[in-house]
Image 1 (tube, rainbow, N blue to C red):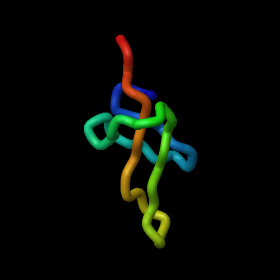
Image 2: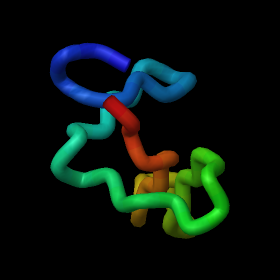
Image 3: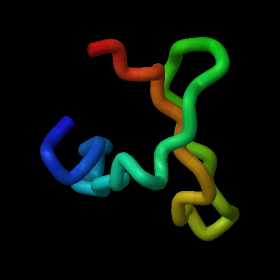
Length: 47
């Protein structure tokens, strides 16, 4: 994680505003047939 968002393998950054809360507490990246990101789920942040 950085100030901008989540860093994924392959140097992709997902802004925090585009991440959805993960219902099972795991990280998930959904992709389209061309490999581009469709959605991203992350565990809720606890502060």
